[in-house]
Length: 323
Image (cartoon, rainbow, N blue to C red; front, top):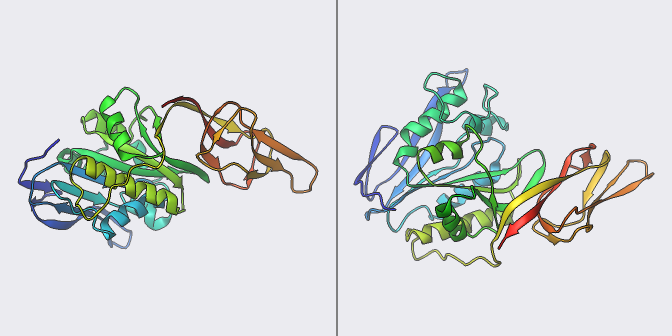
């Protein structure tokens, strides 16, 4: 995987080998006519090599991914030994500014790819990304978090059939690799149609930054860059502390009653069937209902909302694993 282009054209600007640039990705303005630009940070080594893109914030409320990419830039990890590293910490700048998941048009950016030049605002953002940046790239890591108060264990998501992605997911070294089908009109699906490999990182929850999730993402980025021989020697690519678990199938454990919810199990835990994972109580001290594991597996997601209704998703637990 080597891009030998001495000149890289991104958003209409040429960047030569050895150059570092910050280019503004501009799509629209606020009602005040103030420009809203998405900074695209590009660092190129003098030596040719792969072009790797790190993205985050495709949903404006998923700030932990933004923090991961921010640290790659702040620590200088994005300055490659060879090749090119492109960082876009906040793809959905409108949602990020307004602290919302969607863009101002109410659309989910991750459901409109590959977009349209004359479509909705979200569709135009997707179109410009797919037309002017993605075709120049060899490899992508896209960062996400859990939504609606649900905290995801750090994980990489790939399709089961993609053996090359499995190899790179192992190199990344997150605790779990979850086999997950592509969602129609998602960024991942659009990249796949262009034959551009993409790892989707999930970790944490919306409106929250967690140090462990951030460290997993930063270390994973270093490992994948080291795998491509792009990591400079001043940065150490540590080996994962535990064996990577491949999750083939998983399911939600749902609330059987409404009430106040408290989890007692930790994320990433390996549990046996009937293990107590948490409790649902009422506000008046009249009942205390335990929530139990329905099978042996690993806890991949925990709902951290203290108030739940019957049928709400509480825990996601693996049902089939592949070591």
